[in-house]
Image 1 (cartoon, rainbow, N blue to C red):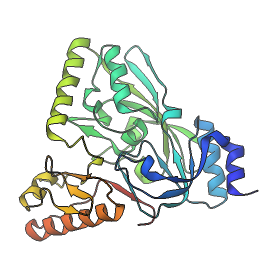
Image 2 (image 1 turned 90 degrees about the horizontal axis):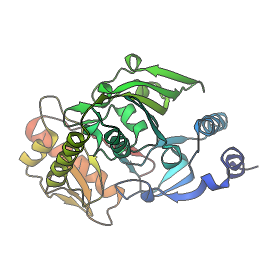
Image 3 (image 1 turned 120 degrees about the vertical axis):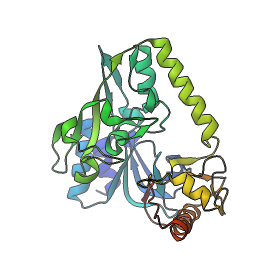
Length: 301
């Protein structure tokens, strides 16, 4: 049998596509075809899929909703495993929320608010899934995942399902043990605090207004494009370098917020990469600070 038939046996034909354009699965709305694109329905299908691909020495990459990802125009030679809508269950027990890795942070925040639980408002506008947020210790507006995490269930490189308490996660700025050891986050448990439902929703509305005012939400992007350099703000450095509105093809430094690279329409991945490199070069030449992309690059450019 071929790879397609083998993957069908593991996942079922409904959870498998060939030559799937990654522009359909990234918030940048760019990216060529992945050889295979699979959407597991549960932890066991993830484990079986990864085990099969490792045995066959087939490259694979795991994504959520593609919110921090730039895929090359020539696509990806291998298998993209998407942990998203089919693994997005959320439930609440007292002050704890249990969610699968594919659950959107916005949905978890709404769930918390509906149960009058505070502490997750900061994540309500982060355009990502729980799995990616745990792996990157995502944060915004003074909050970050390490403040609310209790533990996470992950698939280790050895193929074992293991619970990682938060103390083991080595959570730092946009980093965790999962970004180092290659384990795949499958679900997590969060501990929040009782609060006033109206106050929680009011604060979430306030944060939404701040994002709408300051971020270019009307254009496809991957969120903040660069990591925050120590002692500086990436957007301020880019602005001070005179790069507000700087364009390469269909890619542009946002005029609204210089920390965002946006797709003005029909941008190629090559445009975005070129823009990112030119911005980093110009900032470094002027200020001696090298900006490092926060966006992950994948595939053939």
